[in-house]
Length: 483
Image 1 (cartoon, one colour):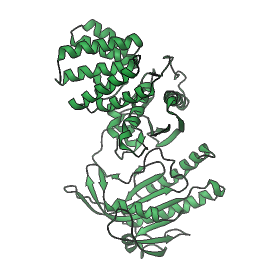
Image 2 (spheres, rainbow, N blue to C red; image 1 turned 45 degrees about the vertical axis):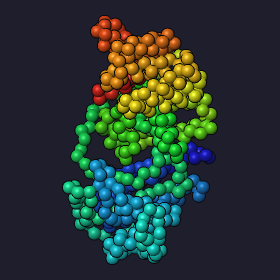
Image 3 (cartoon, one colour; image 1 turned 180 degrees about the vertical axis):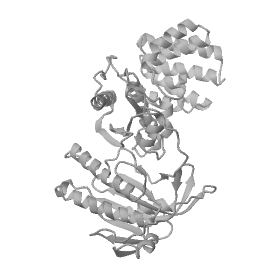
Image 4 (cartoon, rainbow, N blue to C red; image 1 turned 90 degrees about the horizontal axis):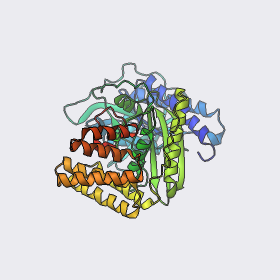
């Protein structure tokens, strides 16, 4: 990646196409991908092993076209076993052992469990190397490991396979489940999402929403790579800021936060998200906050499951707003080129830097996390962080608007004095507009206040001023989503 990012990503894309096509050819089901890893399941153990062998043979041939320093090598692990079923996800040793086998494999090789070996040794013309019992992380008993000796194709194989049957009334899947995991050796940190070892199981089909007539995008929650769950507020906040910035672009359909954040922590692939939200593109990435902020981002065609653009940023924290502007600009340029839309240009909204005080910005992001939890205690905590942000920067318009929205939220939930809360909301909205007369959150807040006071003409006028900058969603928009 350090030597040639574009060439590395081209290789990654080419290798993934080979892997995905072979999974499909062997009647497997692609479960998920973390960018540098693939998880798939098969109804037949024989098909899973045959697929793994063909993947390694195909990638060896593909690597022969490149110099040694540019080759990507994979490890593959295959296991068969029961899994725990919980909603749309599966867990348990069936998945975990496959992941551990992948870690034990050498670059370019395949490791299988003893249970897989017993089912394929007399059915496939392969050679096997006995690696004995191995103790692996988080698995109570040693796992018996066999290494496949490659060099040819997997010989005669069953055509009937094992029937896939799931006991849906309980929590166990009773079928033999073969799971293959392929992970890159030289690009372990290329992924913009953390590796996952959980998978979804077939569930009732969710209706696919039609694509809008304009370019459409969902910004998914960015992964927190700091290793500290307490830093989630920052990665979530960056995602939320990008949603707000993109939603200000004319002619771009942007899914609102409440809809896209429903996928946080779920093992759902981009294709499913695109169908469920009715968008063509997904923007996803990762954030690591330390002395510097490191952001990885990728624009994915949800329909084709291809990466259209990726980038990495390592900047001082003070440059965070410039990085956000650069990401938005690149998204607009890329979509314009892909869709041949000449009018997709960045509008001139003036400076996008909401505050020069980074501590105030950090407090605002912390408040945002509490706002969306929507409880009385969290609403009070959000108010404290917003008041702190305003103390640090009395000219922070968005902080005034956010604090203003805190009051009608209390009114809707009967957590305080409705009359006092509405007066405070109007006052704070006016303060925000005095600092930034185009602040959509403050305009929407005035619209809400006017509506509650039965001042319908004023509510419509303020609402119309706010509309061009409010994000669009196919689900119901509540005022809280606008803040």
